[in-house]
Image (cartoon, rainbow, N blue to C red; front, side, top):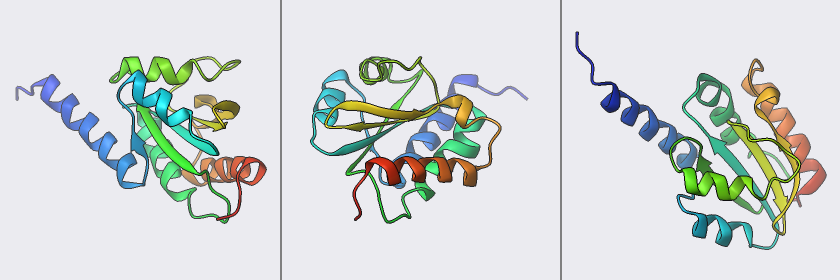
Length: 145
């Protein structure tokens, strides 16, 4: 069986993008889009997406389910590490004090980093545990909807 690896990866990436946008996150693919999104007033959750197993099995499901909570970020956006490099690099420039990590979540308020849920907070945990971590962040920094 001869599988074209690039076609396979394109399918994996497309599915990963669809999962997070279906959950309500706006995809940012350029540094200009990142600047515009992170300049918004209020709280913004940035999901740094990736194709690894912990992104698909834990982070993206948690990103969707964490939103079923009384307090939520005002804005939901996503960048794709390893795919949209310019956008990811620009987003990470806002995450001062935190090393690059994917998948991960960054919560910003008025364009300034509040906290992150990093890969080491995701990998090896159940989606429900990551949902609880995200909702704890929402509880601390977000307003009730």
